[in-house]
Image (cartoon, rainbow, N blue to C red):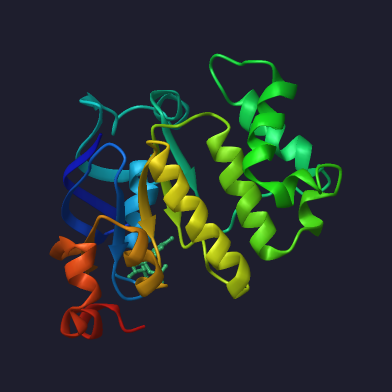
Length: 234
Ligand code: ATP
């Protein structure tokens, strides 16, 4: 579904990603792990076209997209939820969700689409008329994910969704990811919460200094303390 070949990226003259290759098959959850500064966020940002200088190839369903504009990638079925969530203050939860509809190429009935997504996110359903910025951190994260999902993406890139969120909501969020996987959505996940991420993942890649240094099934990695200590201790 998502294939990345020899991705290189730079911030100014700093060569941050040094030949990343990875694959996420349809319906898989794959976690990208690694210490702070390893290049996880940069990988997702490069795939979304947010870095001025990059080289390599990336495909969704065999369609090469690295040289497409961000909105074209979006129409190919690639969605991105950045770490900072980007909830628009002054807009209600409902209006924030509607932005996800507006961004779509073939817009359906906005009301129906918002209602549909609200069914999956009961916390949001109760708060549709509330200012998006007044939600808790975890609820804002849910809103950002719901807004991305409204476009029915094929692949969703999630950057640190559990960051700064209270544990009960983190559990809810991981349950949601497992459910999305059952619905056939493909997920590339960046998470510091390694144990919880691995429990719902199929496979994982470990990044270190801009290179993939290890990959294995999530099940094997869960019991591999040595690798976790070496590459994932914050
Ligand atoms: P974290 O968990 O801390 O976000 P990460 O694995 O996501 O870590 P990146 O944010 O991708 O790491 O950073 C990779 C490298 O690129 C780091 O050395 C970082 O200092 C550098 N970097 C990140 N953003 C920029 C930027 N805007 N300008 C210059 N260098 C940057």
